[in-house]
Image (cartoon, rainbow, N blue to C red; front, side, top):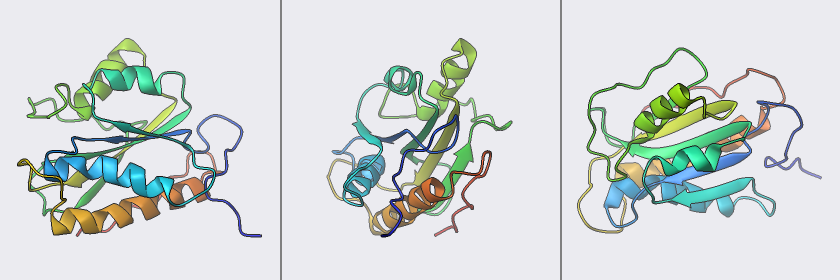
Length: 177
């Protein structure tokens, strides 16, 4: 019998207990987090808790409260090539840029992490996958490079879950598009 990559493991920080796909389904590439969440749901009969979140960024604080390990997926604009996947483990010393953003969620994921950290409301471990988008105009289709990135992010999250028994272990960085 094949091992289920969605198994729930005991102990803090071992396996994601929650995956949050953040986005706006009506703004093309901004829907990438939602697309990843939907694809993850199709990959197992017993998925971890998977949430599609189209709300304001402060709502993330309530979603991840009391969770031991959370993965968040959202579109980003950093100037990298469309479809580039960024993986950030926020348990280290990484600090999201504090420059103002133009997030369609009001408060961006990075700003929610800053707020959560200052309020002591981060999960035990938080990993953020940012997929570089290029098309944020009205529409419901992802641009081709972002659509291709969906499967890479899903596979990375599944690999992270499968390798989770070793405390402190992180999935390898994804190759850039």
